[in-house]
Picture 1 (cartoon, one colour):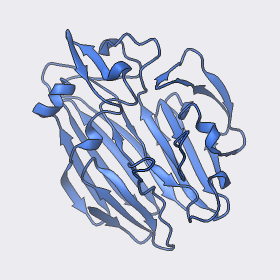
Picture 2 (cartoon, one colour):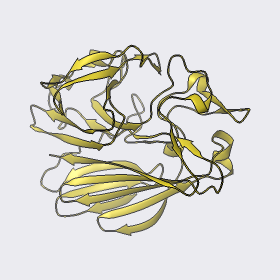
Picture 3 (cartoon, rainbow, N blue to C red):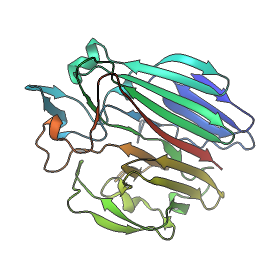
Picture 4 (cartoon, rainbow, N blue to C red):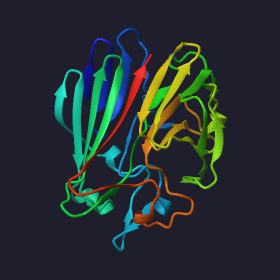
Length: 292
């Protein structure tokens, strides 16, 4: 386990999946990050790569071959190597090997940087295509979960979600595990939304953010604490809690990609939301978490 700290924060990161394990402020005893529970959701903040969401039948076709890949890709279940570290920053890396090639036939390097900057955890992903001749096709996303209620006092229903810009958004609806982007619904976020478990009866609430700066704030209205997740250039941001079994957490998920469309034909070259990276090129993605 890797521990980062500065005058305001103490953060722990697991090398397995480069997954956040703990987020605490120095001035209180609150654990902001969901601690995982095998009875509900046993993860905490997985990295989604090289896919976001589920593929139809957990498979896709590329280059006349069929590849099998479970929901959200394999990066979350593989160890990252530390390549740089200071007391308040760490850079970790994962790259392709013979095992990844069985599910994903591309060369890649995925670096994740966690840095404590005053009272924020700044998180950056850098995807590089080391291939000399093949375009890398991938998606990437984050899936941090936060305790709600934060102190264990009260109920899930005391959680409020507010966003900036505070306006109406196109909400992508899920049909089972797959997105139905051709039939979006409007969701009015001019005012804060009081959360309850039934709001997640169709899985995640997916905001179509279209590459803008989007901020989601979760507030435990009894404790008067919460988290602010700032996202930059995302295509979608998912807000999710488990349903119909329930647990006291909410995830805010910056996505540069999305689950298969209900009409997907299984061909990777046609898949919605995928990014294409030319040989020897690099793309960068960024978001931040501020506990308060």
